[in-house]
Length: 270
Length: 233
Image 1 (cartoon, chains in turn cyan, blue):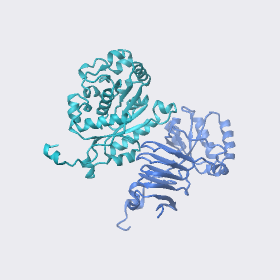
Image 2 (cartoon, one colour):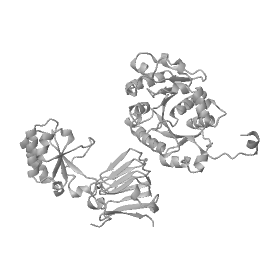
Image 3 (cartoon, rainbow over the protein chains, first blue to last red):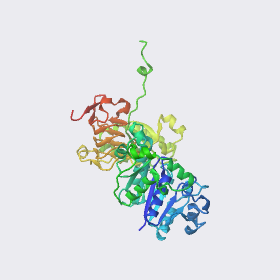
Image 4 (cartoon, one colour):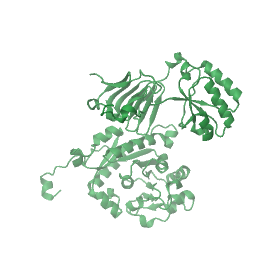
């Protein structure tokens, strides 16, 4: 049974692609056969974050148009077993994706035995985002702790609730969970950022995890390594936790309060 | 003229919600239209003669026919104000008729049938109950009362012909009595609204008293102004 998961946010730049790459890698590390699809046609990024940009031959638009088959197009990740990347086209625009075409791709991935398909949605609430979300069984909504991002997430939640196949077939609302990224406990304490509780209260969906604002994320992007593989970093660990919660494990939240450096921390420079 | 008089003491723009009734002309046969209209007016309530009426023709209707329908509607004493944009009536036809053009949303609109305009039937209009959060960008309309058990996000819109109850945080817009019921009220557990309105009289967030922010309140219309009172005060 394949589970299709859309990673959405409404607003751009909040960490959708970072999250798609991290969660897909996390699931593959747990042994699930996972595909991650870049739906951001025209603004392809996932291949960079996954470090496979030099191996892109075909893309999802080629598959939909019948120029290439899925097996030729899928890129097998070199670091992580069970992980496959379906890149977006950089030269086309989002109208090149059709619901029928995407439906066929997802069906074919499912026949290949994928257990999870992670759909990295483009920003916005237009056709591109709707196409990415259409076949989803559940959603991860990525939000930054600031009002504009939270409002856009609220908007996308409303859209996810009504404009997916699940909703159209009357199977009820799409289950959605919140991933709060770029969280800075220091700034929350100073009142410069919304707290976890504030955001959860506004969006009223279960919390999947909190990813701290971290240099590791940028370093990982630049290096083309999903940050979850940087297991010594706070962001990497937070994504490992989020993956575990995604799979139903119950873990306490980390990185949500200001770390007070203890004696040992001071000694070793924490 | 006293010095401190400002421009807005003389003229002032004020936003009001206006309900229009659309008369859809579906067949281009004047006699039939006249008969059908008369029959429906016989059954209609007196209020139909006062509401703003907009005519809607099929695109590319004959200008002579349009002219005749307009005269006929005016003869029946209806308050005709405009023709719908979708009718695509050329300007040179409209100008001598002294009519405006309004764009109507393509969505819905309900048929004012004989049954619905009977006062006895009005009391059984169903209340709409929403248990999920109303998200930014979503709109909910109720022909009666509207009850939301959860929160209403910034950028969401509630509209009800009757009362509105929100048992969560009201951050969006709430418009009660949208068809002119001045007795309609808005109740909410936490007032953080962008806009509240009763029968077209509205307050935007700025007008809401600071001390009632985030408080449980009821909002009602007192003659010409909205009144906001704390609940359990």
